[in-house]
Length: 193
Image (cartoon, helix red, strand yellow):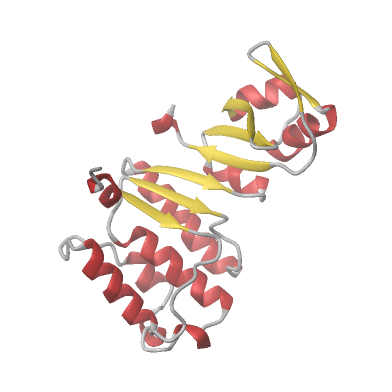
């Protein structure tokens, strides 16, 4: 099949597995060779995370937080239309976390679409428009934050999700299904609606 669609997707796993013997610079270069499109790269996070001094450092020596910064910078590097970010702030210090959240907002305003997965519900409340709540591999709620809060009578996303989990019987669009604890949360912006 045609794999051209991949050029429009950026991906940030929760814990990137880069080759330990490569430097951060080698990883950037390798992905640039694979992706092409040298012009128009987005190096804003490279600068804002101050990655310059560590680019020549082997990945195996970098801290978890520094690896996560490299991971985030790579996800945005090729200006994808769709970004899949799995637990994007995991391992980041508060300054780096704020920098990444600002970048997400900036790119959303520029028309990019994000799918965020996170257990940090306050983060999703801050960054998402639409929520898909998955429990035991099934979607139990899909809609706006306002719809979810109205459904549960709660004022925060965290309490609304907790309410759904406590009920153990979740009703969306008139369909009731049983659920159990162990949720994974997905936040999807309006572009996917």
